Length: 122
Image 1 (cartoon, one colour):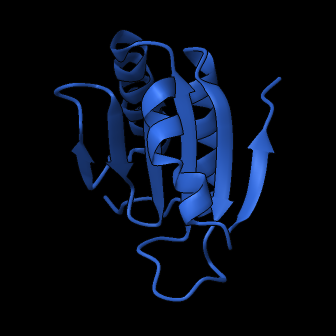
Image 2: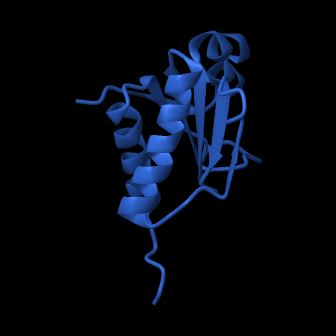
Image 3: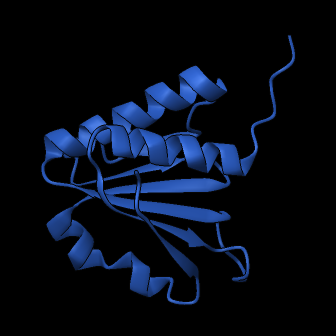
């Protein structure tokens, strides 16, 4: 059985759907492809209101991506304290923050050269 190749657009779409399903907030897509020496092509950044919600977002992403695309993250970190969970899908890295932690690190500013798309799910 050959593994289905998942397009980056499909992966982004399914991740955003999963975030929206558990009411993740302030979803932004950062396109890093035009920036030299980046670790991936895209960041997806979102916020949750508590460590419970951050965990729920992370779990929803893993469950829905696994179910719909038969893919799983290469690496996940930060689930112990659930203030900032990073999920690495190789070309797409998802950052799930509690609001105060997101404001503190402000990674959107660190990647100021990236093309930013604010996602407003339906």
